[in-house]
Amino acid sequence: MKFRTRNKTVCAATAVFLLMVGGVSSLITVGTISDETTISNTSRTSTTLYASDSEVLGGKNQDSNKFCSVLTASYREKVLFGGNADVSPWDYSGTDPYIFLFQAKAEENGYGIGYGFMVIGWEWKENWQNYNCYVCGMNEKGLAFGTSGVPEVPLNPHPERPFSISSDRFWCKAMRECSNVSCVIQMAKNFDWGSSSINLEQFHFADSTGDAVVISAGPDGELAFTRKEKGDGYMVSTNFNLANPENGKYSCWRYDTAVAMLEEIEHEGGLSIDFFESILDAIHVEGIFLNTAFSYIFDLQSGDVYAYYFHQFEDVVEFNLVEELAHDPLFLDDTGICSGYCLPRLVSQETNDKVTSELRGYKIKFFLIIVFGVAVLSCGGFFIYKKIRNRRTVDLLS
Image (tube, rainbow, N blue to C red):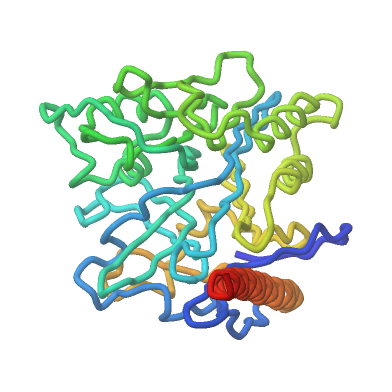
C-alpha cells in the first residue's frame, strides 16, 4: 500500500471530532507518522484494537451510521464504487479509522470460509466491551458494500430462516461467499433481521459487472431491494430510504448533488478516479458537530482501493486488494484473524498537520460557543433575578 500526493488545489480544510467532558478535549489522536510508503511498513497502534479480549473484531456493532453517502457508477468498461463516512463527534470514542484486511480462508473461524476482503471502519471499547463499525468494504472478486443510516423502523421477524442477524454477520458472510449482487440478494432473503431495522438501515452493494442494489426496510415491514436498472449509469444512497423516502432525511442535498454530477459522466470525458473524487469532495461535510472522517473509492474491476483521510483529497492511500491479500500479513491481531492499518498513519505528515490545525480551530470555536452560552444564561438568570427582586421591593413598598 502506498500514498501519493497530488498537486491539486487544496480542498476546504477539515475538522475532526471533539468532546466536552468536564472541558474541551480532542476525540482524535494523531500519532507519529511513518516515513515509509508501503502499508507493510506502517505500524498499528494498540489504542483501537483489543485483541486480548474474548471477541476480537467482534462485540457490539455501532447502532447506526447516522450519515454517509454511497455511490456506484458504471460507464463503458469502468465500474467505480465509493463514498464518504460522515460521523458525529460522540461516535467511536475518538478512535482513528482503520483499514482491516481479512485473508481468504479455507478453514472455519469467526469470520467464515471464503474470499479475502477488506473493510474500513472503527473498533473501540466502552465499559470493558468491544464495539465496531465497518462502514465499507470490498472482496477479491470485486463485490463491494457501503452503509448509510436511516431511522429505525419495524420489521417482520422471520425466525424460520436459516441465518439470524443476532448471531451471524451479514456483511461478512456476503464478503466471504458472494461475488455478485444476485448472491447478496438471495443471502439477505435467508436472514432473519429481527423485529427492527436497527441492524439493517441501508446496505448498498455493487459488483464488478456494474450491477448494484440497496437493501433496506420496505413500508410493509419486509426487506426491499432497490436495483440499479440495466442501462442506468449510477446509483446513489444517502440518508433516506430509497424504498420508502419518508423513512429518513428526504430531500438530501448530498444525494441531489451527487446525482447531478453523475449525470455529467459523458461530458466529463468518462468515469475516472479524479471525477469520482470531485463528487465525494462536493458532498463531504465538515463543521464543529459533523465531519467526513474518511472517503473511499473502489475500482471493482481492477481491485484498486483509494482511501482519503478527513476529505483531504490531495493525499490518497492507494493499493491493490488482490496484491495485498497475496502477501503474508505482517501486523496481525493476536488471533491471526486479520491485519489492521491506521489510516492517519498512512498519509503524509502534512495532511496530519492540516487535521491537527483544523481540530485546534474547531476546539476554539466550540469553547467560544460554550463560553457564549454560559454568558447568555448567566445574563438571563441575573436579569430574571433582578426583575423578581424589584417586583418584591415594589410589593413591600405598596
